[in-house]
Length: 92
Image 1: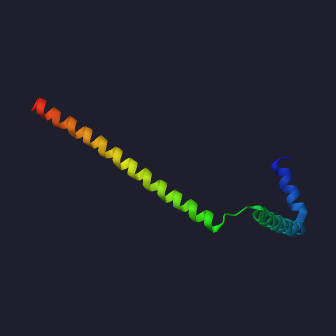
Image 2: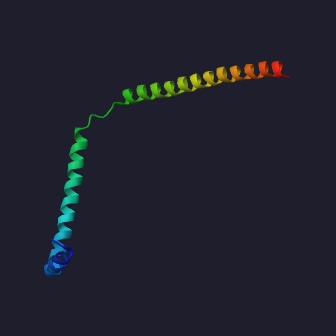
């Protein structure tokens, strides 16, 4: 179907099809929302205790990773400072 045929068919349909299309869109939107509600009822939500436990793990892991990165940075900085001291000593 070319664009011209679509334009002709659209003008032939008239105003009735416009209201039918709007009603069809509302039905589809309502159906989508209803399906979404049904799916959310199937979800197994975490309990408050599980949520607290997982939050503690995330906070602890973040702290441990940050501490590890900080210590690695100190080691690299110490190595580079010692290289700079040796270079100054050797080359003046």
